[in-house]
Length: 216
Length: 218
Image 1 (cartoon, rainbow over the protein chains, first blue to last red):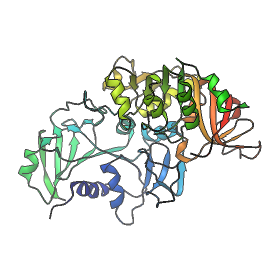
Image 2: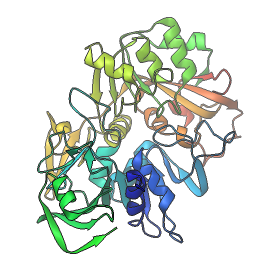
Image 3: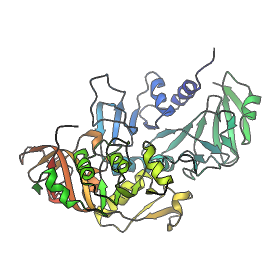
Image 4: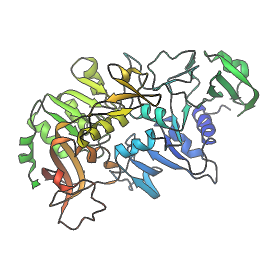
């Protein structure tokens, strides 16, 4: 039985969230992380359009046209939630008050640089809040599939425009957990479903295999 | 502050002007005023806003009707028509990181000559900008933004023009209400002075020039 890669990634990322953390989840795959928060751990979700205390999608018929996430999807406000304007929202993000941001990625390289906002000539959605999030959050986790079809996404050097020159803190894919360090990319964990050889083959960047390599 | 009709308010919005428009993907955008701009075909607009929303919503409708010559926004990914016009050379798009955009608007409204942000350092956003080092850390000098007219969406407005916003429809609205020569508000409800608690008012009426009442809550 094959495991859904996105689910595998979301589950592993969720293990990084600690009690009381202020967390921003990007649209798409990172949003799934909210489904796997460990029991007993309470975190606060921020959405950059202006809320702390974002709750799940409301039941049909209970939508509020003025209560949405950064992808314009309907959300709920949990008891204790607060809403605010965009300058305050990004003061939280850029000012070092956000504990964790989880974002998708197009490429990450040996220096831990992330590219995730455009493909010149092909796709130019704009950076939205991504540049501020990667620059300002205390901890940046990239949650992405290990390859694009078979093309490696973890490269020696990003070929796409960077989101920030800040080194990301952790890369979680369906095959591996990799920590960028001063020495380079340290492979800390590999998935139960893979082998060390496969991970190395599907990664262009040089990986430093941890002496305490774990399975996840 | 003066309460006016949609037919009156449109006289204050001119072709070739720069408009700030509140909203985040259409949430907190004054749709009634947008529709009126389209009806009158007011064109060659420069729009400063978070995004260009969707093709059938908010600023997206201005794009679809080809009324804009330039947009200064953080995101166009939800509107393929914006991307098409940009690639075809019909529309100039200046992409600004969202937090930088918020601070540039705030600076414009707060009398600041610019802001220094670490966001964008070492990326394509740095191109053409002054880099300033403070205590060994690099920052980009980002310049203030101002507009001829700000189009604001409020939940409630009293007869002084004091504004209350609703939940995540707040976003850029209170920032933009400080950063334009003329401030026009579309309010869902107009209430007597004294009804709004001082704490819930986020924009004081002294900043507001004209108010129109939304035609039905959208």
